[in-house]
Length: 217
Image (cartoon, rainbow, N blue to C red):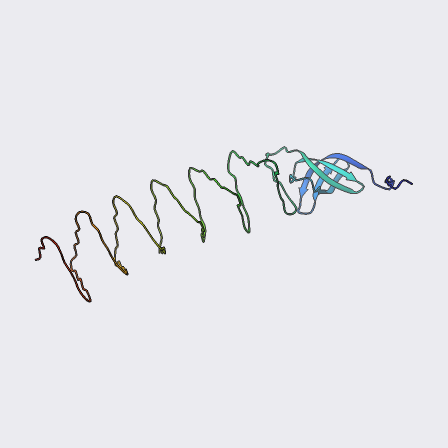
């Protein structure tokens, strides 16, 4: 006998392709209706569209085993669910992937969702972010906007150097403002006005007031 020739086993059951209607769906099997009656069937591994009750399906019969190969027709709404029995990886090794929808696109995960790319671009008319904790690590951050508002119970800022430049700065403190500064240098190009109901200025050593005219009282 030629060792490269694989003999055909005569004991194998003959396969038949049949059309059936789904009558019931469970996690392990399907109930389908054939001309011969109602049978239990399993979904083929390659059938990604999850059948629902009322679907017309293509069935492969081999002996007493029935496998649903595909959904031929759906008489109700055309909503579709792709059901995978385990992990799924989609790869486009020589092209791109596009996901387009006329309505919403929802990404749901019970664990972690990761986005990894050389560059990520997002454009939206309105962006809403809700999270319990937000952590961001970046080398450089640059933001441009017409209006920026921040509402928080407590704000802490720690920086080695901070610069501010604005035409008008208005700061409103309802109760107490405390400054702990090593050295304070103020260069005011025009007028300096300070008003208080009571004012105290103390120095542990020298105090100097120098001007062309000094008015007191």
